Every structure is written in structure tokens, then in C-alpha cells.
Length: 146
Image (cartoon, rainbow, N blue to C red; front, side, top):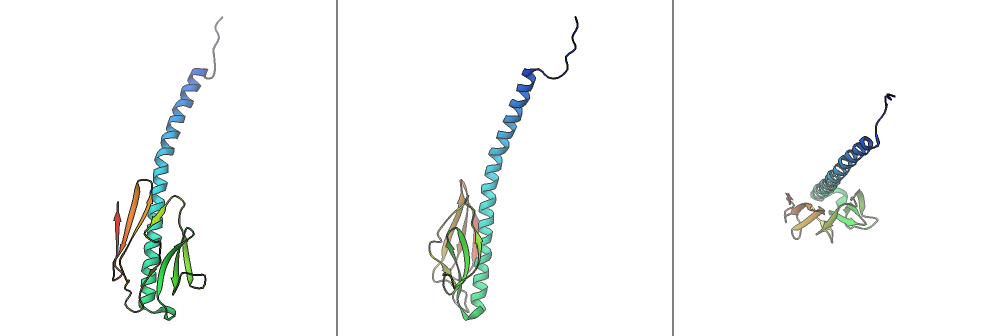
């Protein structure tokens, strides 16, 4: 008796599932590195924007105050005069994939000149990928990809 079979054998299905699993595993590994890099890029971009805005506001004496940037509870804040509830103006959330070092105190620019008391070096990292933002005494910003 000649049977014609339709469908797939168990071995064929197992091979296809195995190949699909390997592809999915490979994609998940490479995408996790991508998301870490993206988080560092976004956080460093947000910090640079806030820093430039704080310096511009200080130089133009907006509200007659010195402006700055601070880090509090995984958020970057733009502030006027001090980094407290009355001074905070706008903020950006920091991804939980990133860590920031070198911003333990606030960065505050002098009114009219936009200068800092001392230069700052801030490192934003996630895994093996990191960026360093250097801010010199006269408010110049330099981005270094490590």
C-alpha cells in the first residue's frame, strides 16, 4: 500500500524551531547593545542641550539669575539659582540603562559671562560604551566618545 504523506515530520519541525531559536537569540544579543548605546547617546545629548541652555540663560540673565544643570533622582534638571523645587524649570529623564558620574554637584554658570568656577568632566556609560562630556572654565563643551 502506497501512502502519500502530507505535512512535515517531527525532525523537520525540530530543525526549523532550532534555527529560529538561534536567530532570535542572536538578534536579542545584538539589540541589547544597541539599546545601551542609544540610551547613552540620548542622555549625553540631553545633558549637552540643558548645559548649553543654562549657559545661554545665565549670559542673558534670564529672570536675573544664574542658571545651571543638576542630577536628581535619575532626572537632569535645568534650574535657576539653585537645584531645589522652586529653582527647577525643566527636566529630562535618564534611562535606567545608563549611569552618570562626575555630576554629583550642580553645574552653575556665572551671570553675564557664562563661566564656571572650575571645569567639569561628566561620564555617561552603559556597559562598555561611554561618552565623556568636558565643560571648561569658559563654558565650552567637548564630547569624547570612549
